[in-house]
Length: 538
Image (cartoon, rainbow, N blue to C red; front, side):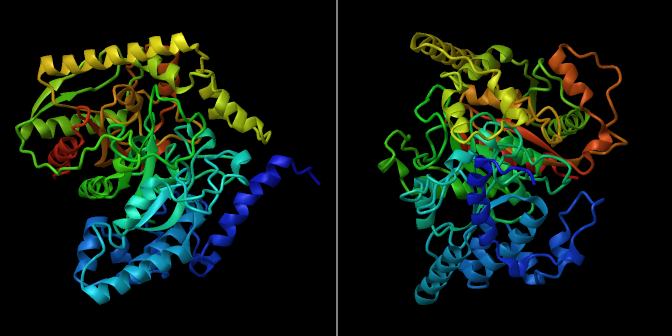
């Protein structure tokens, strides 16, 4: 018998918590499980017989629609929750996206909401009864937060809910499941030594992205109406693109952060931010307004006291088109989606201009320095405390870590500010209000192959908000063949070029990204609505 390492015993603590929390009455029986050859599992809930037609309708309704229906008294919060719990149970069985179900707490919340509605005829708030899944790093009182580190599995029970959770609970949100993330929370993939690998519902042989990969799998499979993820280099937007859903990385300091577990807290050269993944653009507005209406800046005083003011825009906008960042060339499916999108925008009368990437290699050098200014000492300490093995993408991430002196960090911070000023000035000079670009060089990557973050991370270093939305297209091997005439620019470009084969990415959705100006998040969502209505028109 193989020896059991101490780190495995530690990891088992969280594995047991998950196993004991799964509502087993809604698991698929063995004869209902999809075959090993089947890769797309999106239709399994409908085929399973576990959800009623009403419950399928509930789980296929976006959060705004759920609140409207519950406000009319047509659906109760409890029946909405049970529908999503059933779907989430099936989803976890197929995708391994959850780290802990919170069934009893969620049912108690939902019943309290229904009692309030019966008594008053009014909903509690803008998120009344909305089932929300939450990335595991966001704390819940009395529950362990491990953030993908084995050494954190037994000693990190939170004394109170994270501020984001408290704010949304007051707005009526119901929290029913916590979701998986990668080791160190710094991968574009979703795998760790505790919960293991999460799969993509469109093609289970592909990654759901990272680091909010549990959330993208949850929302892509409709295990929740809204998901809460985090983003420091693309960790909301890239997973949203991989799983065919919507996401916004807000400007930093617009959403609360207190109560989130992340190694290296206190590093402020490049900030992480929480934000939503959803199944509609209007739900981005719903979530952000609910968060800011709770005035989280009264407690977390570093936040900007800026309420969310929903906007409406006409087609009188100017869009810069970033086709290629000139470092790594996009794969054929992304090129096709961009080409079709731009053609439709032109036909609709939207003013578009080619946008040449400005010093993106320079920007990526700055952000890589700021990710790990201590040379990743905080992350290394968390890993070494248990002796757990490093996963492949952890090793690759740490090769970029450069320990800096205080003076060197100050210098890089100044470079960041200069770069932000230059980029904004260039947009103003060219009259560009928004930039449409890929969310990633390709579609959902194979496990351990999502490495290149620059199509999202460049906007993190610039602190420009970004929205990802599905183009409505998916990989078509007949249309998206290998680009035979392309000559890679570098070894990195060649590695990504050779990773593409159309049959490898069957059914993968193609997402696009729209980027706006700092603190103009509402206008960005409004512009995304304009573009989506055009791009997804037949």
